[in-house]
Image 1: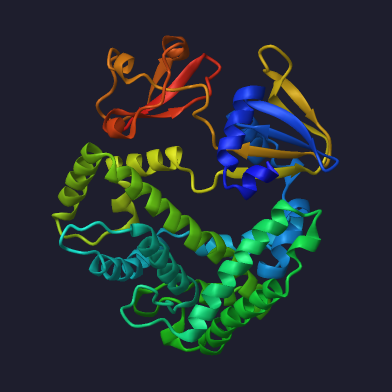
Image 2 (image 1 turned 135 degrees about the horizontal axis):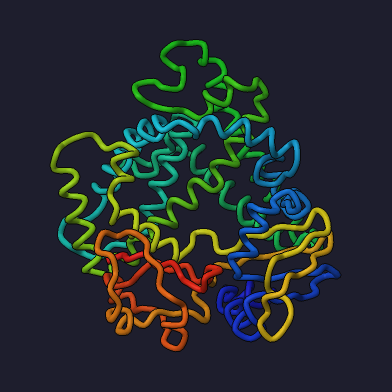
Length: 419
């Protein structure tokens, strides 16, 4: 795996391991036991049913703390509950999403203005990354870094982005090599942490000073500013800074990657693109303002987004460590590998998004079955497709279905028609 990471072939390597050793297997690594699984029942147990038995602090705190501090991404127990209680209320109200949409619209218009109108080819990935940076920084601090602006980006913003990107890269190395800290002890990392902290603290301090002013109470001109909301719950500048950095870490990355993956698929699926365009234009013809609920009501758009996440997950792995002795519900025994697995305290489990292994769809056979045309889920028996599963081509995406590959207790798979 270390060699695969260095050669940027981690997913290929993991796919080969799962195909060789089954959907759940155990290895010894650096005196630790690691379990790799793609079984949804195991993931459900770790992330929901047996949530209290698993955690992340022993795995992540060393890597994350110098950069984003201790908080919801790298803590367990009472401190995790504190961080979650601090952030959750700011995302719990639907009207926040509507306010964010108004702000996001301005950034999208700047992006569209940068797309050539002559039909020439353009690389959208850098533009989506800049869009995510602009929208996330304005949402967090009230001021956008304006990477999509035609004017040059200020020096302090460039320094922050350079420091943040480098710090994020070293955090990944510290996470992958916790027992080899000597390889990540470079001065540039600590300098990057300092630059990122000072940049965010400036915005937090400004928000603290202006919070008592009515025009800056978090919803100025229809805007919602996370820094203002957090400062109404705590007066700790450092804690607020760390919370903002932890939200920014996934916010700008996940948004940019998800949009890139979505348009990568649409560019190869003209039928899907045409149907999606038709739905959006029809919904926008009434000239009503876009709201969170209106967007959620676009069924085909939601299905396309879900299918993109299924084909290209923005986060490929989920890792947890056992905080006490426990079990995983399936993956042990032979030959069926459906027996529970005993897990010792300190064992690590890694879930990889390779749900497509060993189960693929035959579109020709799919067409012989009657399916609901209203887009609602339906059940199809697993045995009907036991010998004919294969993944659809991207060109046939308009005829594919969303697929959860774990059989229910009744032996059924739940399928959802996309196109």
